[in-house]
Amino acid sequence: AQSVAQPEDQVNVAEGNPLTVKCTYSVSGNPYLFWYVQYPNRGLQFLLKYITGDNLVKGSYGFEAEFNKSQTSFHLKKPSALVSDSALYFCAVRNWRSFQKLVFGTGTRLLVSP
Amino acid sequence: NAGVTQTPKFRVLKTGQSMTLLCAQDMNHEYMYWYRQDPGMGLRLIHYSVGEGTTAKGEVPDGYNVSRLKKQNFLLGLESAAPSQTSVYFCASSYSGDWEITDTGELFFGEGSRLTVL
Image 1 (cartoon, rainbow over the protein chains, first blue to last red):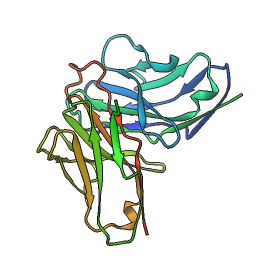
Image 2 (image 1 turned 45 degrees about the vertical axis):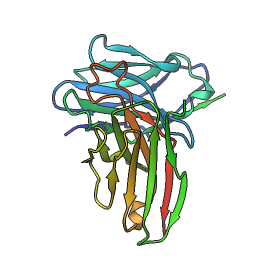
Image 3 (image 1 turned 90 degrees about the horizontal axis):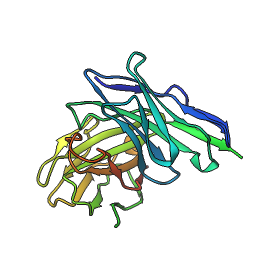
Image 4 (image 1 turned 45 degrees about the horizontal axis):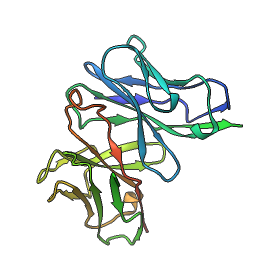
């Protein structure tokens, strides 16, 4: 069965500093990995995905994520954080075959201070 | 372009009452999903549909029913609400389950429906 772990409930970072939001996963076969962001009182919005190819994936709003197969990780990164990046971030995984079994992590709240 | 629209946005029920949440999408997506979001548990799939007239159970289907009579609509019903069903419910849609074909393979989410069962 697929599973996702987001070990940090909250990440605090100062504006302008780099940020990392951690995600590790477990899945049989090749993973399809996703990051979504949720702003207050809104639905989730897609940020980026890894299906195959380069381990460094670039997405919306300057975010990127690095796929590491040996460490089964897919950490979300941004070189310079903005206050407007403050939100709830979800990592999700499925295997290549089961589209309906997209498993979400519990979410990490990112707080960027001015 | 409205995307995915959920109604109602808020609802308070008493235990045992019934209600229906409506999800409508205008993107001509084949696949639609209902999730619930609870603190510390992320999102969990309740039911999903791969096309008009089809439905299937997800991870936590007990206590819920769904219908997809029209391609653009996906209804989630609670026949006899329980306090354990207090949650935020999200509808989502996607073009296809075969994400190798679509451009991004992303799910498009509605803004959520907050349900409280007393």
